Length: 147
Image (cartoon, rainbow, N blue to C red; front, top):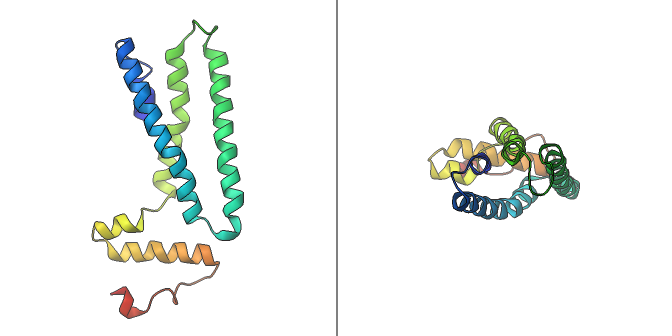
């Protein structure tokens, strides 16, 4: 989304702009519901509702931020620096992407596919401990199941 957002700020012609923004819309349409699904799966039960509401609030804050940026960068509906508006609106997505690299764990399924079984089990145990509110995950799997 970040790349498409930046590319849409500097299109060579109207057809390219329309294609890039269409692709952006498709990507956004796929990832928006996916964010709720992933959040619901990884959040502990007692906090799930609160975090789902917070995600919705952050979407609204993002939409309001875009309106504010449009007010600052555009003179009216027909003129203004729309290139700057599109670049400025891509910046928060860039910071979110960088933060996700350091904060989020990889998918346990992806780790299994890559042959990183130990890391996959470690991530699953962490998810188990977070969701159950326990300090260890000894009862998650027997030693025989881990192999």
